[in-house]
Image (cartoon, rainbow, N blue to C red; front, side, top):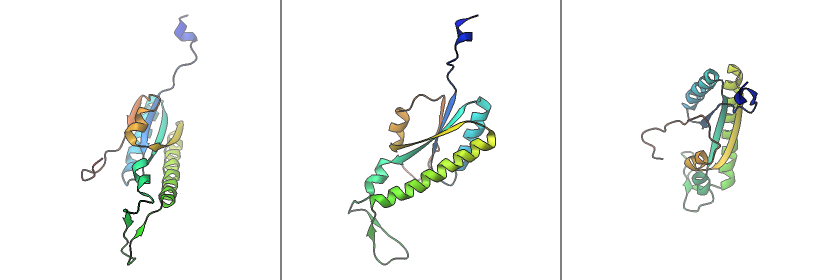
Length: 139
């Protein structure tokens, strides 16, 4: 028997999908889950809490404008964090739903960083899927 036949530490294939709560993000998640099922791979969901977005909180120059209020107001960092916690919970639930429906193993990770930095720091997955933003949004 060869040495490979005795090796029980075969690395599991891993497909990573960057999650967000955009309207079409579910399409990417469904495609990623289908692909992971075909590859017999683990599906890893990655949610990035954007450092630049969090940096807007408590900045006196950043103001929130509402059609229902007559005055503008600042945005506190804790308000942004509260919204992000809801977004994280929704993204985790969506990942669990697609993984359960396809009977695949899934994991979920949250990082507070910028997308490119977070992707560079990851253990190398076999495939990374990210959603392309709208053409009128500059990243």
